[in-house]
Length: 333
Image (cartoon, rainbow, N blue to C red):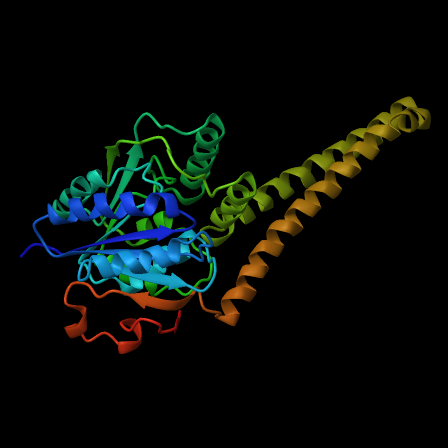
């Protein structure tokens, strides 16, 4: 029996791309030769994307479902929302900007059929700015260093997941998460394939420098404790160096007199400022961890679904709660 496929797409202010995105994705889905659905999650758009998604769900009844969140919760929470409403045996994630062509989806489906639990992708001939490429290089290197999971391109959201991996991710209740890394923690077999990458022709990227920095903090604090270990090692090394430097000053003072120590006062001030800066960095990272613990303890919802449009893959008979099927419903997760 062929596995069913759910294609999950987070949408945020992509009104100019939605029609082409849905048309191309529906065409690909109809070529898969198996049950499939397209789940579009509007992440609090303000450019008319929400209304257009509901209209497209009506136009493609039985194939397209639209989930509208009441505000912007971030790309990864929007994807988790789509996962919780998707019914497929495997799930494909795709960005709405069309830089990753939907036509690559059958290759990911084939990789899952071949036995992979998670399929990542590597963008060939990236059509992004130098800044975006350098940012991705930094993020990828940090992820590999801190998690030990050796995948090449964590920034590409064209990825495939077996359902059991998705269910394991949904069972995790932390508020902040990074789906590609989290999925690899639950996967027994992973694979990577090369995919095409197109230049963005309409709209603007939603990842500013500020958001990229926030993403980096999310990676460091929600997936690993490596920064704390590195701080411990660095703190031990700095303390040992300080003891050695103090001993050196004592010896020099004995042999060369007190005047020599006075001449090095600015060096001591520089060292003092360095230690103060290191303490502030350490407190900042510790604060990140404490803040995330506080957020997880409160167990606030990751997102709120304001309304749902469309039913897919025989959903009315699937046994799902009626609140997840009726347009105009609200769901808290």
